[in-house]
Image 1 (cartoon, helix red, strand yellow):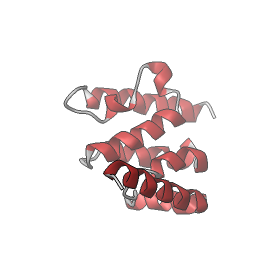
Image 2 (cartoon, one colour):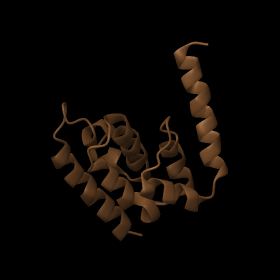
Image 3 (tube, helix red, strand yellow):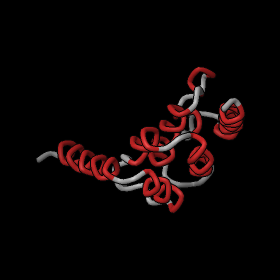
Length: 120
C-alpha cells in the first residue's frame, strides 16, 4: 500500500472515531491539545460544536507555535465556522507566516469572531 493510500485510510478511521464521539469529547480534546494524527478533528469540529463553544479555543491554537499543518487545519475549520472568507480571510492567511502577515490577519479574524458572536 502506498503512503497516500495508507494516510487516507488512517485519516478516515480517525474521522469516523471523532464522529462517533460526543461533542463534549471533541471540545475537551481541542482544549487539551489532543488533535489526533491526521487533522480529522478539525473536520469534525464544525459539525459537532458551535463557534460559541469552541471558537476562542481554536483562535488560541492559531496563536501558538504549533506546527503549520495543525494551525492550518484549525484555521480552515474556524474560517468555515465564521464568515471570515466573506471578509477575505483564508486559512493560510492566519497560519502561514512565511507568506502572510499572520498577526494582522489574526487581528482581523478576532474582530470577525467577536462580531459573529455579538450578533447571536
